[in-house]
Image (tube, rainbow, N blue to C red; front, top):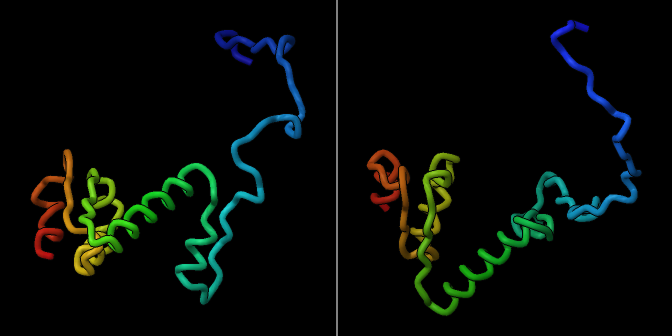
Length: 120
């Protein structure tokens, strides 16, 4: 070992078995990988019921509820939705009248990003 490096003192390191560690996620919480021929409903149902999986369900439920009550649904988002290629999804929801307006912040408001959305 080069002299300019120093050793880490592990004498005060405490360990404990992984079985005794508390975790937010359990194996049974994992999403099931999609299998060939499953419906979107089956895929959606297989998403984890923890953390962001629950957040996604809450958003979907709120959108469905508002749409059924003929209430407006405004999608408020940053450019990451666009950058990750979700434009076709947003556009389809606009065409179907599920989303009634789109509000963008930051770079999402640039002409480059909004031209496709504006044409629908």
